[in-house]
Image (cartoon, rainbow, N blue to C red):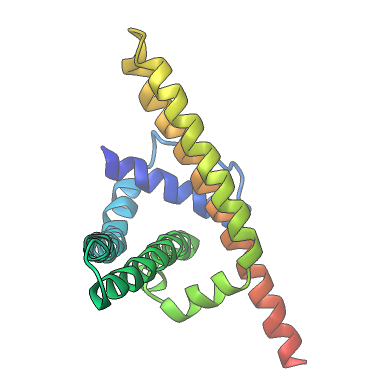
Length: 193
């Protein structure tokens, strides 16, 4: 079921990137297409989850090493700082990999690291705004999640809330990707002149 939902989100993101109407895809008629998109997205999702998992492990090791004195504490501090920066970096790379995949539904685009890094470099200042909006969506989701837990209708309301939050997040990511792609294309046109 979640693969279908992620496939739906990627189709939604594709529609936003390509300016297609309607923006919100029809769920009924394309369930197997969404399942295929969601299944293909597992490849880069698992890859980035693996990388993020390794970074979290190194972050934990770094924090543990700071409990010691001397050079081990300095190594732990450097490992912790490097791991934290890497965690943020991989989070944004993962988002851009998903958007690159949703752009044309080619899995190879999700693993095109140089293009994705180039795209990220074109929207450095907007990434902070995106991170702020993402944080607001997450906090709003958590607030409503805990409020809805108190009611019997939470069985229905929580999945609807999760889907709405997902749509907002994927839309923000698609807009950021679209802006980065636009700036990159305009930069290449200017260079060619």
